[in-house]
Image 1: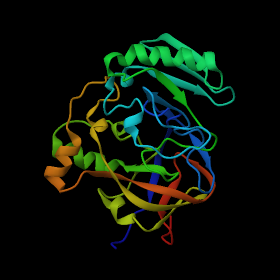
Image 2: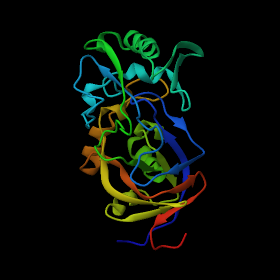
Image 3: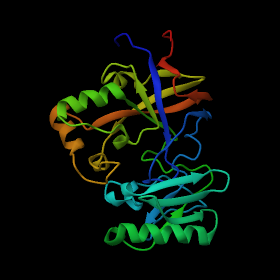
Length: 260
């Protein structure tokens, strides 16, 4: 492995409801073996689905509303309040719905708004689902998704168009690493603030990255471009928190054993 450059945590994001907009976090306290607090804590089933809150299991994202097929989701803003589990959906500054997701009437308000937004993309009634401790990630492991800003810049140069890093729905955005060097970290540990992360997998991209997160327009073909240009569809890496601690924007992040 080549020598590795210390980077900086440029941004932290969580996605309280799978498929809806991110929330920036200036700091977060990671717990060992857990995702970010409330990251993908809720999802919205697209029609009748197999998710069982009493026996929660990882399911493919096809069961839920998602940007890959329901790009309309990018046109609304969501805001989640941890203490009350209240979700607010807005569009263009106008509130569409608000509800406490722990209560049936609160879930119903959100389900009605999502069904109206997605329209013919719904396969049946929408259903807000959750289970204690469960995260509706695209992978079964409870983890964080990391992307490298220099890799975004390299991809921009190759594709000839500006790319919003939020297309990749990261939890952690890193600045200061060489382009594509994050792939070298698979199987290695990272020191990030007061936490330690274990990088275990490259992230295979789907058509959700084709959607502009600001407009909902399908204006790029990122997975096919990655495949043609680099011979794979990977962008970013997944990491587990193997020891907890505070991580905040501006913190150093580097391969364990390398000085920050």
